Image (cartoon, rainbow, N blue to C red):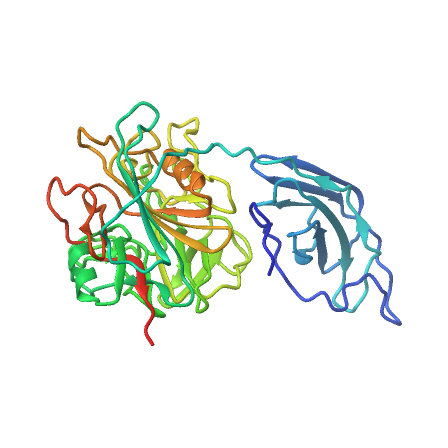
Length: 440
């Protein structure tokens, strides 16, 4: 399914057969709804309103078709309904809604059209940051993989960063490593254990005595074990998390991965049960201090994308999706981060904090970029999440995901070894990801 550059609408896809407005022979034409109006609401939603002129309808069919990237879908609404909230609309798009009453014996009204809805452009809070990058010499890498370093200042602060880039087709492949349940190994050890490893960085955030990712990883098509919290609430952290408001919210995790053809993508993911993964073009909008959202499903927060990753990692927040940054420094009236939909702790999400950071992303031509920066040392003062988004955008990324940071941040390069600062030691981690020579 072709996707637009922003977020997909959340209209439930059903079969359109027999719902084209034609009246079956021998059935009664029902009164049509009247007084149709549509009002755009923030954030990117629209309220549709109509008058119910039927006394005995079984329900309504609500149809939508739109400009490029907007699917032609239908949702079934119950009888006596007089409004509907369409959420997750695309920016700079045109929507055409229509509605039709139906009865179980085949009776239908004529299909009536709502006014055309045109949505505005979505402002991207992240700009672009560019640096002077110098290729790292002395490595033992094939020509298809390059590593670069910068020591340019980051908006007035000292800054050291490295990135590796490769097209993962032909001789190079992208993989996620997972050393096994209840095991950790340093990035260097995981790289050296695999003779085909070329570049490796740390992966997802992890915690607890079970040493499993918060979220999940997929290694060669196999998902890491389901993670349950160790305390008494026993929540499944792949799909729910306690917010700072004391409420248990459903969460979708940012996801980066490649499919069997090595094509990279960034989505939000939700795991209703272990082994089942839905991937979405938009997150479940769980916001601390607000009402608890429904869990992810085949229709919420939008229709899942048709994409099956074979090597993938979850973390967050998502830094870039379809070329735009979905996070901001904005807070709600209750003082919580408005776009921290995965309910990460402030030292992870906090757009004002700048520790060591790690990120992965991809460019429009399918090249994958692995980025690390030093932080909390005199030579390098780290980066905020918003700055990481702007750096990845400056490298040409259209999709990017923030990974674990702080003491976990690290990059290993074949022939060079560990390239970034090791102040505080070489922390063992659970998951890693990087570039490998393809197995024959």
